[in-house]
Length: 409
Image (cartoon, rainbow, N blue to C red; front, side):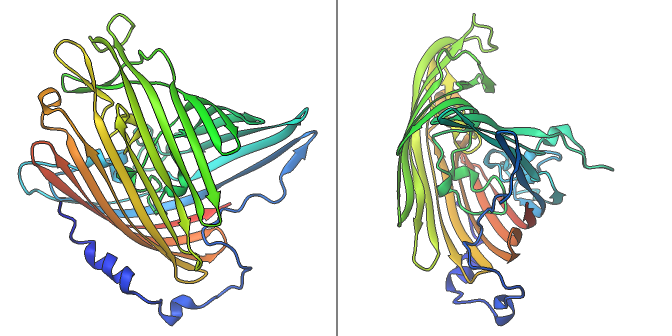
């Protein structure tokens, strides 16, 4: 693993005992509040028995991306966000490539409603952003299509619709200027589901899509017979919050079921995850997430690994995977804060079946400095360095300094 250039920045953040006087000046007096808190609309619109509100943010990102072993084309998600599988890794040490990109695709908006349904409360959420790189342009207008992120209805303890998977604990996500965050170490999946919550326990049935590697090609079969089953236990106190969650999956490929994969087999996938946030008396916190299992590659690191691989007889073999992230967030004062994070992914490929051109591991480190001059307005700088290792011994490095401005409304 070759993560070198970020070391001075990490050491500097760790050794810095405070910020210079100009950085500590309170230009505008604000009431005390938790830095980074997202404030909701205090006066939603009421029509009849239904209350409506909306929110979101406008965000501009600018970044310089350097790849040590090749190039990444544009437009592509890998140029806009940290996508572990997009880091080139070739037999030579070059040619390296460096690019500048800027976009406002992270701009987001959501609409909420709430009402009473007898003794139950009923609510809805519809959320969109503009991240579809393949449905836009970077010439003349920089237009991008709206994209559905979340869309669900809640009725009492039930949630029905598209939402983040229950396996993921958002409290464990490091604060990052990259909206996808430390993706190599996190769970990342939003999907249709039915969820039930009771006290500290939650259970959900979520959409099942088997992601296969078949003869070197990554394909989605669409042949699963039952939804993924998730179970989660939450813990919360003055110390922070945490959760333990698990999933059991039915992986399937049916050559007669309308899928594109000429295989006929099924297998069981499973995963366990532990994540959360520990709070400290000075306002700092430690965030963490650790996940491991077999046949859950599509849940981790933006599907850097597939769920399973087929053999010559068309049988499915779930692929073992594990990933994790840990981050420390420090509040320098009411307006300045920093996060230092490390994360990584490990994939245990059976190279006799998968070949040696696939990702074996990805590691990354990042450090940032965020300034919040007034509530809801953030300006920040972040430095990321990552390395991707292949099963054949090749690797490639990725370095990205980024600046962002975000205003939440």
